[in-house]
Image (cartoon, rainbow, N blue to C red; front, side):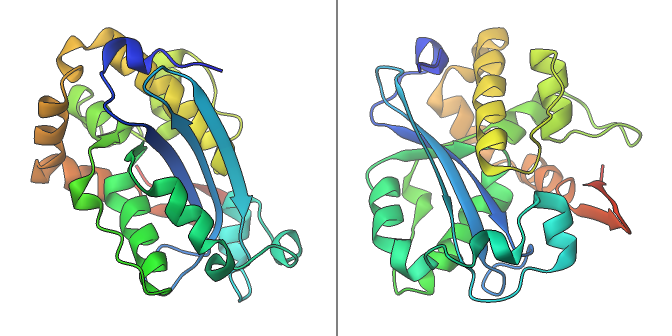
Length: 223
């Protein structure tokens, strides 16, 4: 499998586009139960991986309703501690990306690595956050979401039928990034991307529009 991302954006090293499914949203308290990623090589070739993780605690019902992962699904899976060396190796010497990784996934992963005594300093990595780019070009509308499913519909013309599955969210994010880079030449510069990553307004909109909405059996994403 190959991506067109490298046709538009030069990679000096591999970039890992990843997504986490977790027991909740609180860094340092909640735990990862699934991590999926596509490692994009400078050639454009993709190496994909998805791992389930036993959080060592019961998964809240609200979380399971969102991501479809239940206690029985992870009871025989390894803990983060047991997978930490493998995951550290996957994220060592690479840049990173995803959808709202600056607002959620990167800080959350840093917290998990901290629990095993490792300092995951992503400030030294280039970060390709599709949600930052998407929010830059699509104005906020209080009556319409600016989430992953909305971005996929806008840029790829498809319904995101695998929402809140790690591998599904990663695949959709890569497709969105391909279209963003194709349609917006201004995003083909790492200098521009990193400057946008530092804009407080964009960072705040990505964070606040990520809040989960769970009402009974209905699930979705606020805004």
